[in-house]
Amino acid sequence: MSERVFIVGAGRVGQGLARAFRIAGVDIVGVHGKRAAPGATSHGPLPGDIARANTIILAVRDDQIEAALDQVLGAAPQGSPGSLTSGSVILHTSGTAEPAALEMVSARGLSGGTFHPLVPFLDPERAPELLRGAWVGVDGDADARSTSRRLAGHVGARTIDIPAGGKPTYHAAAVFAANFPIVLAAIGAELMQSIGVPAKSSESAVHSLMTAALSNATGKSPAEALTGPVVRGDAGMMRKHLDALAGDDRALGAYRRLSLAALRIAKERGTDPVALAAIERLLVPGKTVSR
Image (tube, rainbow, N blue to C red; front, side, top):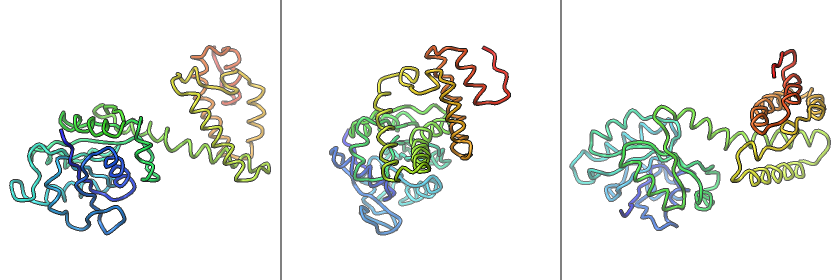
């Protein structure tokens, strides 16, 4: 099927998707913004060109999806000139929203669902590169899922079906993967700076180390990829870390919680249970640990 895509939302996600699809040869009918903006082909009321599209993508914030759906469905009454043809698909890019108005989509003879790229759209120019080999979370009716899979295939991405009722957990997992590494990088760089390492050097060193760690993890299970004092069972080293972090509640709290999470992985790896019990006592003072 030849895709003809109209994107509602001219922010970073909308522009990034438009750029990636165009490069892949997908027909982008238009990119619509609330106001005139670079990359937008229209703004204000939806243009009549939207009727040429067989797929509408709502690339707007979660709190704007219902309004965008109402705008698309109300742009022209069903059967009137400029209305969407039966069988057209409306997708939104949220990993958490369950728009109530999707019921109206089905009632109009249209299909609806989710197309949530697991990609950080910080720079729309990089979207084609980042989407290649990435994953896209999809849900909705059969036609919506099929369309999402085709669109993902055009840009070299793969799809993961989001189970019914699982969106909050799915999106929390995405936050762990996409947002928290940035937080951890900031903490790591600040710790280096606290002992006198220049800001630029500390940030570059932390970024290089995180990139290498992720590269080493490619194709491996967490138990195979994890390095560091927990998986080595090095309680002595961890005591030194805890002492060094004693004056920084944020860093100390993150270190304790993440090290406790690492214990589960280390157990799977087969690390000496006596050493792991000693580490757990360090991380949770006063806790009685049974082996």
